[in-house]
Image (cartoon, rainbow, N blue to C red):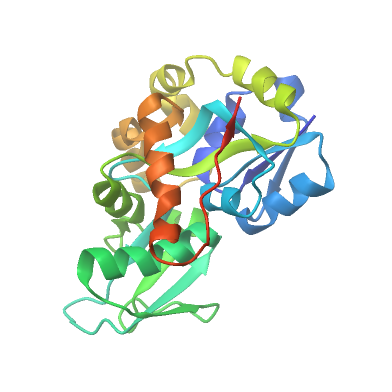
Length: 252
């Protein structure tokens, strides 16, 4: 059984909660490639960006395990130029997925009445001269130093539900149920052991402390509240004319 995880600290925490025999089968991938990898190996499962479900309706989705946020912690953070009102461009970098590309357009328009140009960026970073949306583990070194703003918090406030950033999905439904059974009461276990888990990662001390203090704004269990939030989230591209129809999810 192969488990494909994106490269961020929250998926790493999820991976650490799995039995050692299962950890051996973990593969780390760019978020944007996970749905393709699942299609290539139908007997694998992956933690993939929730908007990938829009273009992969045949995937089964775990009704118990996901990665959701509703506060200070996030997989993506916004960084704005200090003491400047210029807001005509956002540079996007890191582990960018369809979630960030589509949601950035929606959130800036709906929450701030702005339509900045969204540009994928690989140049040297300059926080004094550019606005950024940085995705994934690249944030570990920047959040506390450059006052990163939780992108997940912006989305959660907009939909009035937790932001389901990643879902556990597979073309093999039994693999999902078997894996979910290994992760019972995962939220409570993570909160009880967060310092031990973070000590296993090479994180900046200040950021590690920040994660530990705010881990209660991250949810690895998919409750009815998160399911409703996921439903509202997936409607947004339809309402904004980005997709033609909303397909029903195949929860298991």
